[in-house]
Image 1 (tube, helix red, strand yellow):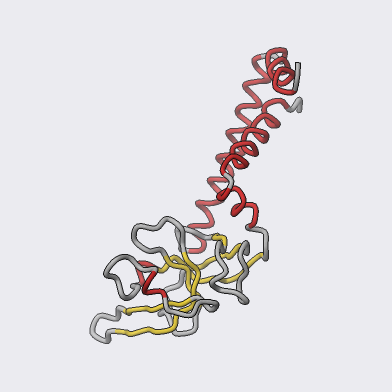
Image 2 (cartoon, helix red, strand yellow):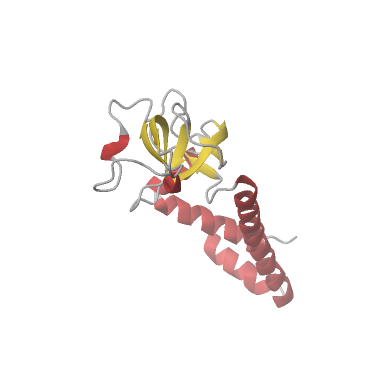
Length: 180
């Protein structure tokens, strides 16, 4: 009958109580992951405590596929620091180095210009239309650590979405059909 037919038969043959228990286990796994993510947000002070480097703009410092752990501090941004920032209209954060900071003494706010270490030009071409500088509100965090190449799983699933759905479906079936 095949794998899918065997899986359906396995689900049908198990008692309702066991199926319900397995669905609750799946829900607990998902809610635990969300809880851990929210806890990391509170601890690090950033809405995105973990990001994946998706381009080669920061090579050789960070490679494509590196996972960065971020922290957001109240310390002012300085030239030479690496920051992760969002741009209006873009969903994916960018990891680049600060090359210029202009602080306003009266308000304490700063205009920030960034550039990828491996790029020839600054990031003004990446910023939103008409935007010449970043402000503190655009900064998501600063890297405090990284895991090399572990983020390739995320990149592959983003570039080939069908693999993401296959993996999620397979993991869901594994949890639902497990006999423990």
